[in-house]
Image (tube, rainbow, N blue to C red; front, side):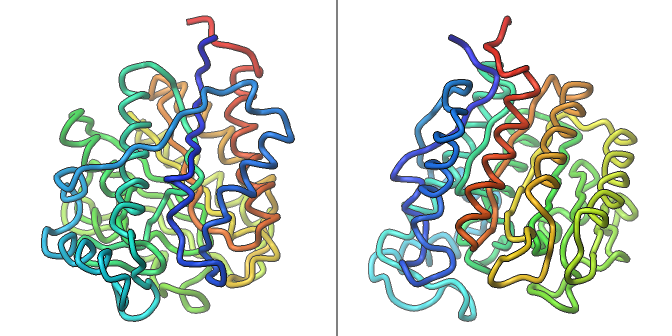
Length: 323
């Protein structure tokens, strides 16, 4: 059977984590996978294996000197890759390169029309800058994907949509002056949460001035606030007519996360995924890549990411493709 939606799973992908006692631990993929299978969604998707990116691919977004630093620290497993949030561990280079490579594998499968959309649970590492790590993010797979869509595939309008509690600063500042990269981000106001960026006045620079959409919301915002913001995002996307959509579906914006103050429910993430499937169907030949992003309450991860996959499958009516 041929399915329009793929889900990427595997031990190599689960290996991106910073230890059992760290919020970004190696169990995050497994709790999602167990719930997703319990809901029977594995019957309606193409399950695919992780891939590892080459250094050349990683350096489409990151500077060479930083990538070499990660390789060096990967051997010793000592120190930090930033000012103190993102510790090195033995094998960190391979684990981070696998996150990037899996995202690129999904993109190539989508662009070759093997599938229309995909979900990767351990992905969406949106804080990493071109020059360094940040906020548990070693390599910015979102940034590498965008550079690949621009360069390898020649796209001219790529939409990055982020509903993680934290502002996607690595992506925003990495492309703030590029009018080809559409950016829409609902996040907890940076006055109350890391990384402290993403004010509504930040709309891009240079040729892209006025083209980026940052939507900071107060702590304890619920689905009513999300719904109002989402209407703005839908209008923004319909106006710009993207050719490919990325969704960073971080579950840390769901109520009960230990390191944020948001009160969205998994219904917000399901609404976002369903809406983006429709918009992708209208403008992008269905091309949508959803990334798990953050989330540190294990129950929220399981339920929220499963809701995203369920919405993607439901767009096809839960049946196999008739392509």
